Image 1: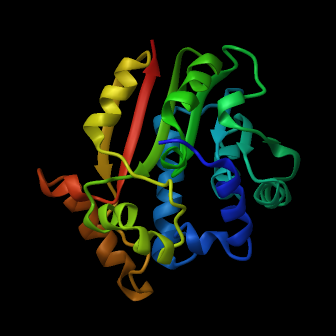
Image 2: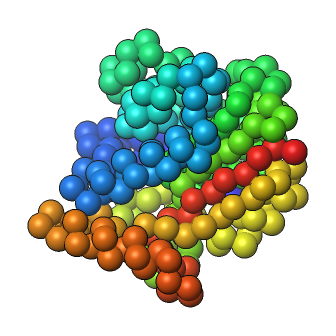
Length: 241
């Protein structure tokens, strides 16, 4: 799935007035789900003070702001200078923010203990992106990403029907992932200890008064065999061999 960079940049400008709305983190339910993703990434990647971590597609810094609290040395990139400006305003000089393309990272080989991101891989050419991820990730370093699950009925429709894509604010190249394909891709690209698991049934449009109840039910649903496969997100972890 090739990344159309001019198209992605134009999309970033179009959503600049309210990017969190398009990223489903502006509602009470969406905010809670986004915070949970940030917490999962930080915990699964094993953030600890002094580690060098690369965040891919940092956007306005919603996740960056939370990652920094772990005491890591955060390096965060995005294609959009406008979105990156929001991230810098949000986090100040607590992170190394750079306008950069993941296919040509401005970092040395073996620079990072972890490479992470939230809902970014589905915008990218995975083959090209992971050449740079594996180059800059230390041996034994880890990746942790949260990405849309193609088996979720809404996501399957949203990512495959062009009219729905436009109405939902997606770019034409956006996709989602099947967990078995992601596992196979990572195994073929130098990673071990691979885990790709469905999670997150808390839809961003759930009314505020129902968020607690739906969240509790959703966390139980994540443990139900077969049903859990249609959760909204995939939690992706692997270690570079």
